Image 1 (cartoon, rainbow, N blue to C red):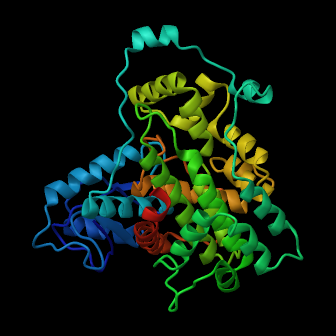
Image 2: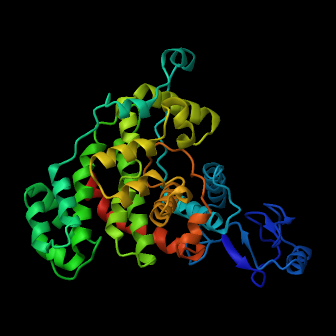
Length: 407
């Protein structure tokens, strides 16, 4: 599929999506085969370009060898995943287009695990709970985090800290040091010369950036232990990692210096779901079943079974870990960034989560592309035109980094 100007539009082409005028009035329906009168109508109503089926830009499709039937089937399947997100916004239109292309060329869609249950019996036996209340009363043992994370936070918050201070903390853990240097020397950063010490890494990349990467590596262990019958831990971690990478790229594009902190926020955005899947697997199974059977968004139905959402659980956990408030709020508000007092970081995580779900890198259990908070696009520099670059960069970095964080 390709978006073409009216000058490029030719008789016989087929519309991939509806053509509307600037006021939203429907001019031509999806699947219409273009004829000369259609072109006149589109010009009359000031339509600048339309999306046609079968062709893509930049030579991504070789028309002589493309399986058009498979391509259109892919597009129809992807449209199902966008049913809650909508395709009216130019951002979502372009994301949909890129999602179809990416999935078609890579066959890169890893859906959530399907859970077979006897709903008639289980709905009577599985009790709805007030998870927030249980957490407030400390009835649930939340996972601990390495003491190194607390030490790193102290160093970051101390304006007098030096590169050596960061290195001293990181070097307390030989395994953390080895993994950190492995990432720094990978194609993720693509430095020309090898970096052989944490001190050198801090000097080249930055104090906060190295500390954030170390925190990310240290928190990976929390993702372990998800019951296999509930969710695939590797897919969950892939989704989290991809979201972090996309958030990092968006931040860099907007000249936000804390790119690695936003990477950590993206990595941890669904950490609350880990607690739910581990400790309340029965409720999680019923939640999955209900959403799959009724095509509902997972995060909108969580409160029905759990009394709160995974973002609430994530906020409580990350606060316990004493992570920075900006990071905690980015996780807490990533589905509703407009509600945040400082919405820029949550908006970045919100968009990163939507892009990651659309492209299909891993899965946290959500079957559909989440709803877009359109105000998120106005808070940061983000035009539909840069989506292609973001997806391309993210998938490249994902390939080079995923083995380091999932091994």
